[in-house]
Length: 448
Image (cartoon, rainbow, N blue to C red; front, side, top):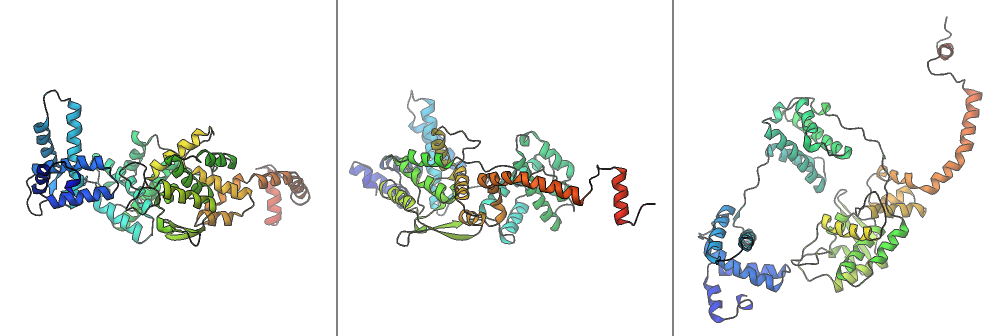
């Protein structure tokens, strides 16, 4: 392996006889298989030799980041020449430590000390309870952990334990400067998380009873917002805008079709694997982590052709089984945020003005388009993978054809209601004495 990156026989012997030669070669192979460029691997090969010579190796010894940092400082001093800019020196040191950490982690010899999380034992026990007994999805557990870690950190800074937490501390937490920018939905999520934790904590005798009941959340209205997405004509324009030959457009077209036609979430697209597409049966299988099930869809010709073109022309060779990979080396599955940013850029380039520009609006556009085409809410919910029919009811608010029909019938309905009121029910102003006497006469046998 070394002979691919060195030019002379003398240099080759130097690399072969340096410490941990076999481990260095194994890491170079791993980097090439991961999609790193030849130039980058060649540079890392030089750094690995320096790292191997800078650290005292004992059998099965774990190396800490502090030790690696000290070795990096000494290496930088040895290689720095007069006139070298400080910026270049800092970049070289950072690269030394970064490559060394990655290599040691690959070997299983990096001593990583995680950042301490206050009340870590209680947090882990609570998350296990949510996972094992309540069956919450992994992404939900990540969000709960993040919210509780923020709260526990705030408690730790003030020297407050879980056993002594009361309504006063919780009120101060939500009144703190760091949470004032939160929207009502964010505050509601944190309140729900704290309520859930303190109910569990009380059952384990970690805190006083009844704390969860004292945590008030902001008023949230059912279906208070509209699922506002672009018009279907704008979705068609968006698909047409990514019909070019550039790798970014080829990949974006396949992703946008999955978002718009099937209503997939961006995270579900990121997790889609090559094995999830059955080309012979023309089926695509989506693993939904919330429902813990796999949903089957027919592979629409337009989506199938876009995915196939991406795989053949753009997707790099990689050991990763995810369908979509990054376009730059080292190739790996993209994160939902990064992929979503690219989709948002394509949407904004159309000049469409929307309240929100996240990739989720294409899911809304899909549901609204199906509703306008005459599909029932049950059918739309099944298509979107909703577990509960209530999750789909919000789209009834954007069913304009049905709303117009209801509005046209309102005049007849109001006339009928007025007629029934005159004929059957006498009307009394609220709180009038006549109304009270009439009620008493009907239900109490008369008021004397």
